[in-house]
Every structure is written in structure tokens, then in C-alpha cells.
Amino acid sequence: MTAKTSRLAKLYLALVFIFLYAPMVVMTVFSFNGNESTYTMHGFSLQWYERLFSDTVTMNALKNTVILAVVSALISTVLGTLATIGINSMKSKRVKSALMTTTNIPMMNPEIVTGISMMLLFVFIGRMFSKSDTLGFGTILIAHITFQLPYVILSILPKLRQTDPRIFEAAQDLGCPPANAFIKVVLPQIMPGIVSGAIMAFTLSLDDFIISYFTNGPDFQTLPIHIFSMTKKRVKPDMYALSTLIFVAIFILLILMNIAQAKSDKKPKKSKEDAEI
Image 1: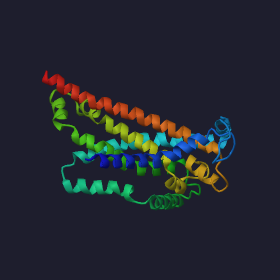
Image 2 (image 1 turned 30 degrees about the horizontal axis):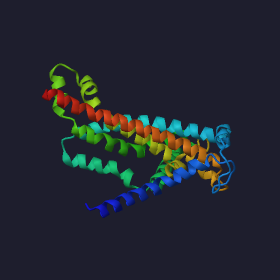
Image 3 (image 1 turned 135 degrees about the vertical axis):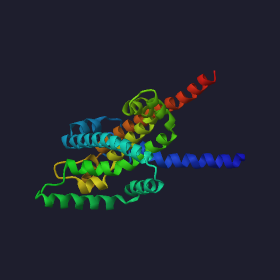
């Protein structure tokens, strides 16, 4: 690679990062603005953060969003782990390929199609049992678990395929029951994939709007839906403050995830070096 090509590559990379993160930097700066202006700064102020925490409707929507994200991520991680083990243990390649294709459909399917189809399904089931208030926390929870599962499965499956099955068999030969052998031998090997899948499921739930819009009820409102209802008038800078806090929280979460991943990658190298010694 020549010096000119290297400079162009660095310039291209810099432009990509600018377009990705410049809007977030602008949003963070104006969350500390002294007035409601979105293009001129009028001093440094924390008034929008104070108004944010005093807004009961917004804080209730944030609480609903966090509860939904945590519960759906936990359930989808458990179900996704079990599903990954079942798919990986199948001997028939055709059945395994068919299941993986079925798993990828929610990822490839447009969200608006998924949201409308699930809404119709929930309403149909509610009419069967003569219920008028079908949509609510339960329906939106099922919808979130549905579109999170493929991401969890695809995060765990590569780690499970990298695990040597002979280790699991050796643990059983030494007298360890299958359940204990899985917990003590296989689970630590695939834990990085489980953690990354859980974090991805959590962030997907926080970010989702379209599917939540079609499957939530009047008594349960998530933060994206609440912000969308505000756009009909004007989004105030307290939403900048809320978005800044969410961005910082996700950023810290990703840093911790990368640190944990780096530590897990160092362990096999150390064990190999000890074995050579």
C-alpha cells in the first residue's frame, strides 16, 4: 500500500466516524444548552436534566422500556441458548439447515410486516377468548422475544461450534452427569457468546419502535413510542438529555463487554503456553 492510498484510507475512515458520531456529539452538546435552541449555545446549564427527572410521564416510559428490555433479554437468552444446543446437536444437515433458515426469517423480514402480523395474531387470539384489551405488556414482551431470538442464537452458535465435543464426552466418562458436565465444561466455553447475545437483545429492545408500536396497549408505553408522540409538536432538549444518558450507558456497556471478551480470549492463550511449558 502506497503512502497516498494510506492517506485516502485514513481520510475515508475519519469521514465515516464523523458521519456516525457527529450527530451524537451535537445532541450531547445541546443537552447542556441554556435555552431551547437547537443551533446556538446560550451558556452551560443542567436544567434539561433536571426537567427530565421531574417529568413523570417520560420517566415512567423509561422504566417500562428498561423492564421490558431486561425481561425480554433474559428470556430470549435462556430460550436462545437451549435452541442453539438443540440445533447444534442435530445430526441431519437438512433439518439443521431448515431450522437455521427459519431462524433467520425474523431478521430478514421487514419490521413493519412482523409488527402488523403479530398484532393481528394477538387480536385474533383475544377475540377467540372474548377479550377486548388483548394488547399490553404480555404481547409486547412476546413480540420482543420473537425478534431477539435469532440474534441470540447466531451469537452463541459460533462459540458452541468452536467447543470440542470430546471435552463434554470426557467429563461424562469421568462420572460427571450430563447436566453438570454441560454447566461446568460447555457453559464456560460459550459464555462470551451468551453475554454478547444478551447485550444485543437488550439493546435491540431499547431501540425498537415499529414492532412495539403495533403490539403495545394503551396502558404500557415504551420510550421510543413516547418520543414519537412528542414529535407531532416539538422535541424539547430534555429528550436530548435522555438520549445522551442512554448513549453513555450503552457505550459503557460495550466497553465492559469488550474488556470481558479480551480477557476470555487471553485465557486460551495462557493455557496453551502452560501446556507447552
